[in-house]
Length: 287
Image (cartoon, rainbow, N blue to C red; front, side, top):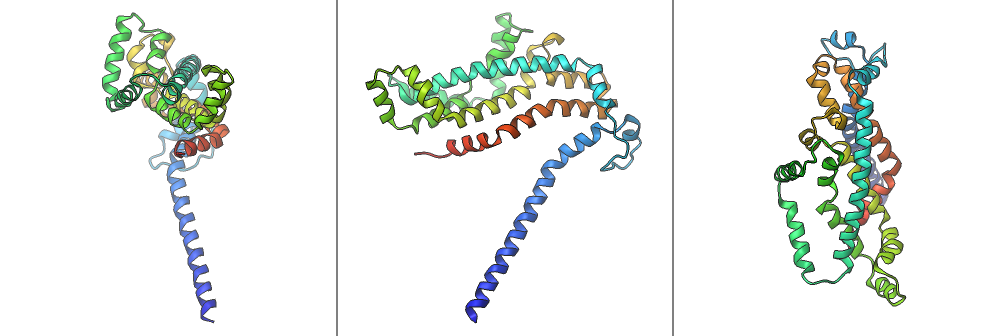
């Protein structure tokens, strides 16, 4: 009898624990998702209804898509989206080649001073980004690359953190595979392409997605290195709306622009979310 009471008590505690967990998770989900809901809601409110709300409403009975039309006609948002796409694709592609070769060199090749070089390389992560921006700006300006895609792209084609992450993944691959491949006469590049890259594909996909998000949300560097609208990115477009006074007066249209800019990243993450989780899990496992 006492055993049955203990089992019943344990089941009750388990049920209560699950209820508390789900309540906390639900509360946290609402806190995280509410800003996105408010952004979308504001984007479909008319200018008049938004400004007539002395107390903000959590719904609208007369949604409109006019704000999305205004977002594209007030500034060249379409061109800024195209510029951002070009910047993101080229930067991510070049960075992927650079970090893959660098990670392979640190993980598999033996050369004099490798450990010292890698330690010094990691120490670069301690340098504040503000200092890097200053030196990059001076370099790009001296090279005459301001207001060019080259000037936008060059400072972003490598990442110490991504090299470190990929190097740790490469190091988890057994050395026996590498030695066996060398015995068969396989070159280092062929081994990298046929063995290491397929094995570490989840991590590479994670890095690509993170880099795309970084490029898409880039703000400080594009604002600093470009003052020609032909090379503006979406971050410049949002700022241009505000500087023109349009964003201050017509918040719904500005929110519509933000929704348009956010959709590609959300869709990208939803498509590759499983790969991202697998890559993060693999990056956090050693051995």
